[in-house]
Image (tube, rainbow, N blue to C red; front, side, top):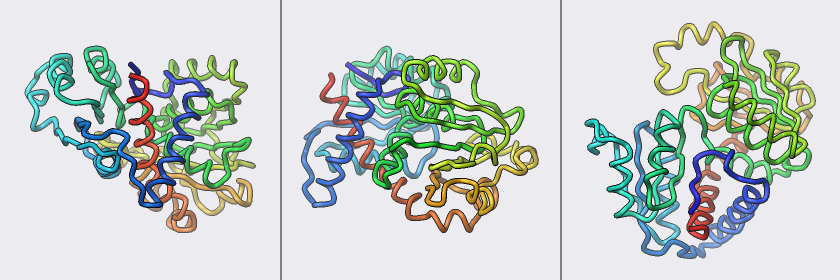
Length: 306
């Protein structure tokens, strides 16, 4: 049985296999031919963090696959009153066929998976956001930006940055990361990526100059400067991230046909200018929709590998 907690656990071949499955399932969906790959199965969805895209995409996704989604807020579970994660896992996974968890610590996901009787999917943790990267790469494939990509990530060294490190180092493309000083990526995760890169041929560059990162890039991406739980740091973060907004001038350093990706929600004129966001809105909202199709593929793939 396999879990989907981080792309670190997957080979290049497995990641591309899931992407191919996502393309196939998306085509079927667009034609109105919903194949019940997970007929009568139940997906338990545990949310310790609030969500728009994650909840809607998983709930609609399991429905389109012939199953049922069960929304479980930590406020409504004994988990919110102190029940150990391992006990929650041993109860819930006797009753459902698969579990998605959106939480804070990666260690919670890992503990749940350790005691789970069914596949577990990360809907996000403070360390990684792997389902988002599957949607991002699916969008790159659709826009033909998956051939020799040069990806520039500008912003906070957070769960999105860590997930880009895993994707690039596994698939073997060039990733340039620019973060303000004091907001660098996790050193252990970077070291893992550099080890994977030795095998895949990936080029990983980490620095603090966003303009240098964007020069000649085929894909530019960013994330909010203030993630959930960091609201009281907003004023300081806005100061620290001065010069890191992806605006028209920064995009002009990338290739002429470079695409811009954002996992959303986007805060205009902070991490990205209104002008750049609207100019690339088709790509961004295709990316958002692809959460649905990529996650359906993840669920089907995990079911096939029980």
